[in-house]
Image (cartoon, rainbow, N blue to C red; front, side):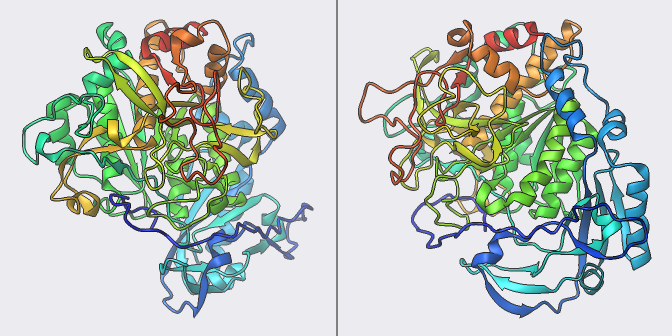
Length: 610
């Protein structure tokens, strides 16, 4: 299961995902109301292509489903998104409210009502609607779903042995509805999402406190007995210290973390007793009937929370969004996040684009466009399998081809890759290289999207390179993610922690740690902007690429360049099967993006652009 923590690397997944296929039957002609010619909506999970059919599903379970509606006025939205992030435009940072977005670009009230009425007439129960009108959640018996949408729901076995259910054919709707419905979700539980933190192989337990009140001590660069760098070391190296010393610690700011598992409040409290943030109010938003209990992915949730709290210890609020680890839960959580207009979101869950499929990534893109229009910043882990993002420990594939990760490759999020950080004896920044631990050691994700064109803002030294093909390149930026120079996490909850010797203090890495570190920097930048009467940063990439392409690059970023030592990794080709794709270069590259940050200097330049 992709949500399980990859604590051990002593196994090899034998699986080749052959690629996704899509069945799209979206009605191209707008049918007149009352014309009940069925039209297909949505696609099928790519996993069906390589799974074994076990037979019809006879459980007649109650399904939690959703109808996803199309955006309106896409051309106008494209123009608005350009102007919102163009400092020369009068619309610069004039972000929309949720209501304004719904009025201008969401489905009409009549369209939403038509879908709701149809579902009620069929016997379903409407469980939730959203202010943007893009999603209608509903529930009902599986047999009713089969009858209404013209599908057969079967049981399948994945190549790794996991059983799941899925519709075997594309669902249909009356043509008058299918003309503005893009997707029906919840007819399967095929997809699961992951990005588990990776435990340090060099974690010296003799030097690490166990469960209790003792706090980890500072790590030392180099050597086989590396222990985690603690927050004040990261803070000094990446110059969060300058923000903190000027009073920027998150006051007045809200951050959200996107999660597909639960967590232990006592674990987070134990962490904050050591590293601060214990007074931050934490609220949970639990969706789609999730029970909120910590499971196999609890360490992911706690890592996200703890890293942000350590860098922004005086936040006004942290919101933990939790949903079941299914495509339905995944999409509903993003729908709720944009409906709440939470200013900064850290996301560490995802999958490679090939496994996600085109229909799903297009669905997510609607939420991310809305987030950008509303001034929300979304920081996403780029994955921990290097340039071969479908090759996953604890995942579902042994696909060694070049593949980018979703949602990191989405054009309206900021993708965060991975590095290995070295410190001077006084904890100041010494050097950095791309994180690539070799086979089963993990590497920072990056590469070319197979779905999204290279955005206009993605330009600057290095963005046109030997691999460029006109598609979106990832990551955008990076930060330390190497488990050997990892992060201390306090975790006793769920199988991911209890299975490592009782839990307590663990040393972990992965881009799942780098993304919340970047999210914390954005929170502090938003606080600085608010002090000057300016708007939040919103979608970061246009500003990041403009700064990185200018004269302040060397002061705001640590460029990850080709190493002088031949034993130092020089690319994120974790497996070594893809000719060293992608190498680090001067400027931008698809191993580390623009590199790591100098938080204080970058925050100042981001705010000054407004």
